[in-house]
Length: 323
View 1 (cartoon, helix red, strand yellow):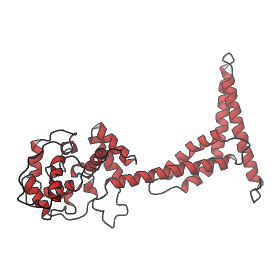
View 2 (cartoon, rainbow, N blue to C red; view 1 turned 45 degrees about the horizontal axis):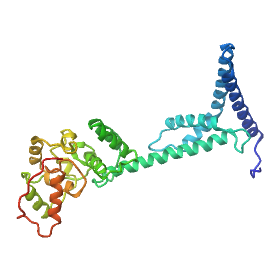
View 3 (cartoon, rainbow, N blue to C red; view 1 turned 90 degrees about the horizontal axis):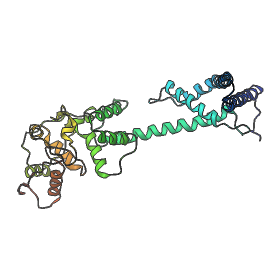
View 4 (cartoon, one colour; view 1 turned 90 degrees about the vertical axis):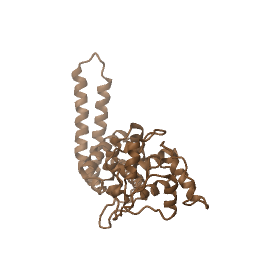
């Protein structure tokens, strides 16, 4: 079949040489595998070494091609050495799958295989970055002068995963890799884990100069009235949160676990407790302690805020102490 242009003699010779190397490598491997056990081990070892030499020579001839191809995929997230390593691995796989007598030469087949595999790698990385950025969606953006708003996000997620229980760490890593859990409760828990100031991730991405508010006791009815009168979280409130130096497991206990009285006292002394509560009330599926209130109490506050007749005189409701 005509390709529309004549190939140079050097190109034809190189393609033929590559094909001979692949054929000889496969012949030596068959000879090695087909050697009877009763024959000398020296014959099998000799065939194995001959096959390895053919493969090594072929890879040496393909090295300039692999290096040139890898340069086209270098970006902020992929360095040349890493891509070259991936290219060599996939080139070995491509050589094993090449069939003689086909329309593509060995080098063309390798390039086609590499283009497919490295494009898939880049697509997977873009999906992972997209999902990782989704984890901090809704947080205040980084400063405009920063070239990459989410630099260090993966490292922060890895540090957070080390502090979590195995189940939460697994869900976090799966979500960051683009495989979010199907359960709304699990998705809400992972989102809450990342967004809570105790996790340390939000602190690296908020911008603003939050102002401390008057310290008030944790009271469901009073807090609901405060939110109704304009209690909206101010930008960067996480910077002043009193829980930034405690374990994330204390504010995000297991489902049904009872949170400690010490945590309630810490929340009452927090200068941005109402901001934290506003963020927790806005998210219907976020578990954990936000503004001193667990999920059930925040659900009641949300119901009060939705009620047209609720106000500061709403009867005090029993405070829930379970996450």
